[in-house]
Structures are given as structure tokens and as C-alpha cells.
Image (tube, rainbow, N blue to C red; front, side):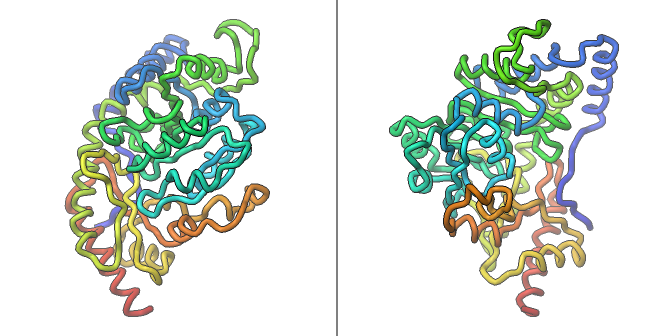
Length: 376
């Protein structure tokens, strides 16, 4: 049996709906900012309990627009070092200065303590990242710290479609949240992103920024330094059709994760990132941390070549404060993130994964760890 690192799931019915709508869109000539974009925005907002949603062409654009809307230019923005480079790029392009912070070993996310350690007199905002689809259990403490210090909390929810913490959806904790619809995400539109917010002013700013900063769609009066951040109608219908499958996808992924949980908890050589009872993770990533001394490259190779199991990409393998492009923004060491980035792996989870595939992954993991122990 072979289990790939990722599998993008569009049923025959999904493909038929998208094809029919694409034909209609092409015939209409309304290829951008049309009815399907508005329908996708409304449906995504409803699915996450948010008043407003603005569709854009990437999760990176969504985050940059939010940061521009809350005016981080010339200010410091705290973010975790174990995130995708686009999080920090968005800060830079919005005119801010990224300040990298360490994370909790239990959530892989910022905590109130790690945020406080990174604050400066010029800090304006904090970007919390829901790594792998997990909303950190202590996010309320980060909210409280930001409120106390007058800081703006922004969610990078690129991984977190459908995730909840204590009954609250991803996207409801900060001033606004950015979601991604890149092909590997739980919900995809091919390419695209979404801004969720309860702040009408941020919604209005986002509408301006995504369409070249124009005061109106049909005019050429520009009131912001915007960009071509629009989502096409073809991408919108793809995302809308996929979004309708979100409850099914969440259920399937939770079933596989529960199967993984039972086996990992009985395995002395690895530990998993725990999801608090009653919370919902979409398990965009299933993060496992092998014991110290296990070489990740060797483990990946053993699983792939001997057992046909592809590990999903790490979150992330190299912390940003150690990457050349961010050298001028790097501070000292961030030991927890450095250790987690160096050691963790992500087991494959697909929205249509079978129990047999999950059992094969678990058997392969045990066998590969035994082999590496014997040869190490």
C-alpha cells in the first residue's frame, strides 16, 4: 500500500458542479467580483460565525490587507518564528517590522509569556498562527494580554478552516483573520484567500485594497495603495463547492486522527500535539514529535522508500529567525521553536483517508522507528 503525503479531494459530483458553473461564468463575461464571489464570502462567513468576509487571491494577500488596514507601518509586529515565510513577508510589505517570538511546546503557537518576552515599545500588533489547524488552548490569555497592552491581535488562520476552541471558530479571536485556499488546504479554491472580521471598518478597507485601492469597481479614482488582490469567479465557485463538503471532511479527518491518537499514546518513541477535549481541529496537519536522537531525514526516507508512506510537509522545518532573508530581523535563540522545527514530523491525513491507510501509516511508523533505533 502507498499513502501519499497529500491528496486533494473533489468528488465526481463536485467536478460536475464546478464545470457547469464555469461554463455559465465564461458565457456571462463576469469573470471577477461577481455573484459567486459574494456567495462564497457569505457561505464562508456563516460557516465560521463571522459577520463579514472578503475574498482575495491568496492567504498572503489576506494577511497583508489586514495588516495594512490596522496600520502597522513603521511599527513592530510580533509573530511566531515557526510559521510560513508569507506571514513575515506580509508584515514587511505592510510596512511593519517582524519580531520573531518563541512558542509553547504544547501548542506550537504563541503564548502570553512568549508574546510578552518579544514586546517592544513600538509593538502595535501580534499575529497568532493556528499551526496545523489547532487553535491554542491558551489563546484567551493572548487576547487578554493584547487588550491590556492596547495591541491588535490578528489571526493567521491559513490552516484552520472549521476549527473551534471552546465553541468559538477560528477567525473570531482577533480583529481579523486570514485564511488560505491553497490546493493542499482542507478547503481549496485552487488559489485564494479570505478575510474574516467583525469590524466593519476593516471589511471596508479590505474591499478597497483588494481592487487596486479604487473607490468603486467601475471607476478609476484611487484612495488606497491597493493591488490586484481580487478572487476570480472561477476560483470562487471552486471554493464554494468545496466548502459544502467541510462538515464531511472534518468528520473524516477527526476519525483518522482518533485512530492515530490511540496508537501514538501507546508508543514510547513519539508524542503528539494534544487537542483539548471539546475543541475541534481540522487536522490540516497531524504533528508527531519523535524522541530526541531520531534523524528526521532518515525517518522520512525509510517511510517513503521501504513503506510507501509520504510524510506531509513540516510546520515548519526551518524557523524564520534562522533564514537568510530575515537576517536583519533576527534576534537571539528561540529554543523551543528551534527544537520543534528540527524534530517534528506530520503524518498524512486526507479528507477521504481510509482506516486501512491510517493503520498502514502507523505500522510503517513503528517499523521505521525500530529500524532507525537498531541501526542508530
